[in-house]
Image (tube, rainbow over all chains, first blue to last red; front, top):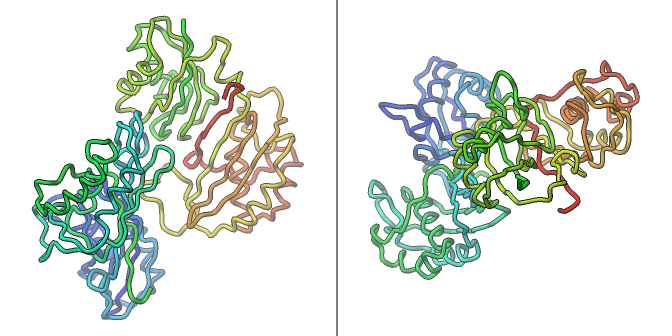
Length: 248
Length: 248
């Protein structure tokens, strides 16, 4: 058995999400099917994060075990060939020690959320960014974001379906950067609650529109109540960018 | 009659190109149909450049005349609403003097060509960038590009179907910039010959692969012969970025 770590890019639009489902396409099932077709083995792929339907990845990390002798490069090439035409690409593949686990060894996860802020709808970015037609004040959003950084109870920003034991998370970074008609929110933490990034971004958009003050972000956080959530941003703009591991 | 100037973004994938065709969808026909639906007038839209099938635009400029009284903002909003679900968006709309002509008043045109240079195929950028799997040397490409800047006879880099009177063009800029697995070629000129940018980029890719030296770009240019062309890059990676006018 050799353990391989993958770096994966995918377009989330045609998928029900990362995780294998009984009904509907998933990124996990697509990669597992490609690996099984190549090796003849029943392969399970474990990812750093289980993204929701419509969420994308530029640098998802995952691992899988293969018994048959194969080099990392050959595995990457075969997976990419067999994954076509699904919009999933293996960007990198390396052998890792048997105790490496894409989910449990992960030290930090990095997301970006892309907003197209203009009157006109997106064209090629349809489904790849959140279109907000009303003008957003990115400086106010950045001021609001500051309140969420640090170790907090994020119950307000947590999906009702979240399975985590605790609502406590340490948010290491929540930056808001504007460039032309694009606003990118970058979020980093060891781990996130279900829907946490989308819920934080949804509320930041309310701040950007002027419907909330930056201080309302703190009030929402301190409420520790899902009912205090202003808005959950759609999956379209969310990208899993990278995951950090001890060996990196 | 009021003349309006439009700034247009479009995804070229579903279109036969900018120009109205007897058979097949075009960006021009889509905008003309939207304008006609709004005004009841037979509207003709003139663009700064006629992009080929599969070529995109982030900032195409165009103009049209409308008899019915309408504000520029209202026109933009109506066109965007009527264009759905076509991937064409009017980013800006302003009134201009009657002697403004999107094509003939244009002082400079700016293109970008995007290459994804990695083993793995693109995912959401399929059709939005040229995938080159072999490693490209961007520094060599930049060295080759220098030979094309200036006033030259670009016959080598001109389509057999080019209708321009002269093959002489002044290329003001041909930059090659690498960022991660992306290489962007930026080209600026008052005007370009048909297929000129794609032909220049195709040959630069040969330089990047090491099959041509940077000096081979000069030799190809000096040959003034379409048979000296090494490679025509596909439309996928080409974007019409912007056009300059005296009033800007």
